[in-house]
Length: 310
Length: 184
Image: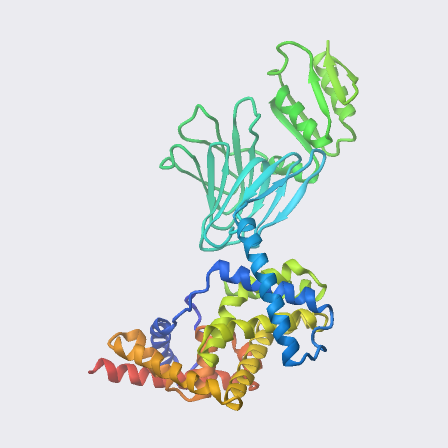
C-alpha cells in the first residue's frame, strides 16, 4: 500500500477536519488484509486465461455454451493448465538472455517499464521474476539504461562491477574482452551508486555529467568529469567516437558495429592509441583507410573481413 | 507512483486494443492480485474470486477492439468484476445450496477476527464492515484498491462528488468509532 501525500478526499468542514480524517485514513491501512497471491499463482492464472483465449477464438463473447459443455471445457482447461504449469515452472527459472548480433543495435523494454539500448554484440541477462523480487541484471558490452523509479533498486552487474540506482539514466561500457578489463559508467541524469563487486563498501556516488571507471587493479572506482558527456553515448546515434583509445579497443568496436573480422598483423601496434570522430561512418573500409593513413599501415579485404599490415 | 501507474495502464490499454498479447500479460500481472482481492469482498472465497477475475480478462481480450483509451481501463475491469461477483452471489442464492456455506464462511471469518479482537487492525476491519454499503464500497475502492474518484464514480455509477461525500462520511464514522475506542 502506498501512502498518499495528497489524501484523495476533501471535507467540506475545512482543514482541521481534513487533518483528523487524514489520520484515520492512515490508521485504516491496518485493516487491509491482503490475501496472499504468489507470482506462481498469477502466472498459473495467466496461462489459464491464455488457453481459454486461444481455445475460444476471436468470438468468445458471443459463444453461449450449455453448462454440460462448459463442464467439459473446464476439464480441458484443467488438463491444459496442468501441462502448462509443468512446462511453465521449468520455463520460469531459466533466465532471459538477450544477445545483440554484430552489426545491429537493440532496444529492450524491461518488465518494470525501464528500457535499455544495447550496442552491437552486447549481452544482457535477467530473471523472469525481474521487477518483482529485485531488479537485477547482468551486462557484458555497452548499454544505455533509462530506469523507471521504483522501490526496489535497479542493479547492473558487469564484469566485476555493480551499478545501483533507483530511477535515472546512465551508460555502462563493460566488455569482457577489453584489454584493460575496464568498465566505464557515465551518468546523464539523476544519481547512481557504483562499486566493485568484491568491495561493496567502497561505493562512489555519481551525479549527472560524471563518469567513473574501474578495472581489475582498482579497489575503488575513480571519478572524472568529462568535458563532453554526449560523446559517451554517441554510439546510440550510430556515431563512432574514439578518444585516445588503443587500436585493440577500436578494432573490436568496428568488428561489432560492422559485423566483420579485422586482424591486426603489425606486431606491437595493438596498444597504440588514436583519436577519431565519425558522425556517420560510411563503411568499415573508410575508417580503416583513415587509420592506415595516420599510422602508416596498409589494409586489404580478406574472405571474412580485413587485415591490417605494414 | 500513482501517475506512472495510470500512464502504464493507459499505454497497455492502447496496445491491447491493437491485439498486443504482451501488453495484455503485463496488465494481467499488474492487476490480477488486486482484482481477486476486490472480488473476494463479495464472494468471501478465493477460488470463486479467481474464476471471476480470469473470466473478466477473457472478456477483456474478446472485446479489446472496443477499448476506449481515454476511459480508465482499471475502472472498466473493476466494474466487470463487481457485476460478475454480484451475479455469482445471486446464483448462489438461487441454487440455494452454497448460500449456507457462504454464510458459514462469513460467520467463521468474523469469529476469527473477534478472537484476536484487541488489535487496532481488526477493530478497523469490523468498523469498516459495519459502514453503510455505499460508503464502504467507495472507501475501500479508494483506500485499498487505489482507484481515483473518477474511476470509483464509474464503478459505482454515481458522480465523483458523491464519491467524495461517501468517503468523507465513512472517515467521519471511523474517526468517531476510533475516538470512542481510544477513550476505552
